[in-house]
Image (cartoon, rainbow over all chains, first blue to last red; front, top):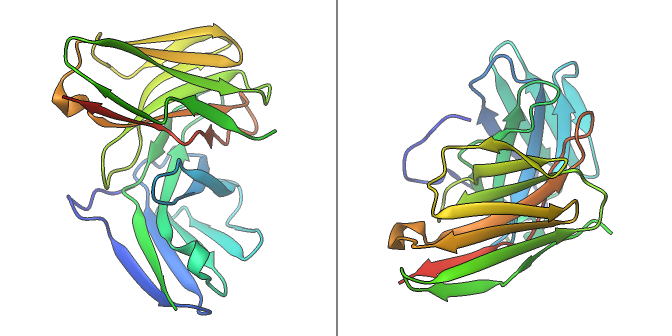
Length: 113
Length: 113
């Protein structure tokens, strides 16, 4: 993901609305991407993943979109709930057998009741 | 069981102390990882073990010494740390290959005084 300096990007969304969190990745050779959710005081929690041979994948209330042309990844969360408030990280990986994940800067999502 | 456990949850140590962080998983994962996370930053990879052998060392100072006694356990031995080493230390595990999503533990909050 791209560096945005010392400040964590933030996004505030009204409860019940949909949210979209964006991530720009840097390595055109990346072939696997993951979204993680990290709540305060906890480790990152796996949300959803997508391989580079796909452009969309859906889970429960979440959809990940991949645009390889512009090296962009997004996470859509439908009908947001207070429990969705957290920091969201995208992560990318290059190659089969390479276990190194590179994390993006992260976005803090706040759900307004 | 999809849980990665880490002990202790919190650790305060002086610069001359020796301590160890412990991580355990029973998911049959053959890759285990140590990450360091500073406040408002993404996790940074430190070490990767594949089949109990060190496969990646991200140029981590020798005052951090990893150990993988068996496929379920991962330790991080700490010696002569600096105050700037204070951070959240996260352990993760994953299968190798086709389903490489990493599962994280809750972390150890380390403070070096």
